Length: 208
Ligand SMILES: [Fe+2]
Ligand SMILES: [Fe+2]
Image (tube, rainbow, N blue to C red; front, side, top):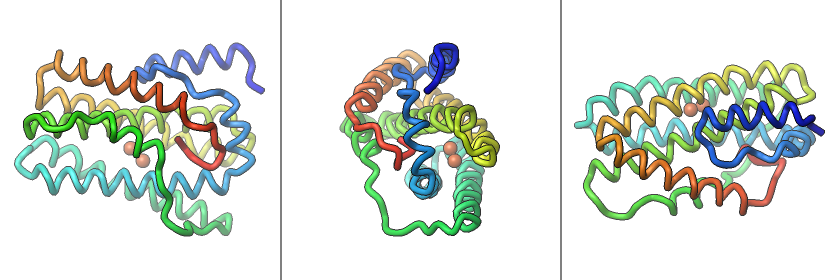
């Protein structure tokens, strides 16, 4: 079990990421018991991060900053996918069948329907930003508290990288709609995400 001081640290990092609800610290205790499943789920997350970046570039080729920022992001996320695969191979774990990502399904329901093309782009960028922020928070917990020293080290790089992506997606959103508009949508998505996290069963076989 985590100590109060650790809980304080978690709250601090959650505030830095803007998230409204910190992950229940018991999640690490549950996750580390089924770490094979976490690695598999993580592999799927990285795969989805790369494909979602490609989809945005394909949909918005005329948005120069999207193309410029997301082209290297896709390469980085694919690199993450390969790193997770390598770690899985080392442990004799296979990806297995496709998984449904409940967290992401719920998040997509927070997206505003309609609006201009730029407004829709901003919705996508903000959903990507929140997934990066929550992933970063969970990787940080693994980095700090996972009992497997190799994995503590392994997750550090992902934590740093996803924190950078979170900022990049938020900054990109502000290029396409005014600051106040983005702030309002971001607040709505943050509040909605907190409710989703609260409503989802705490599972040790999922990153989110
Ligand atoms: Fe990643
Ligand atoms: Fe990322």
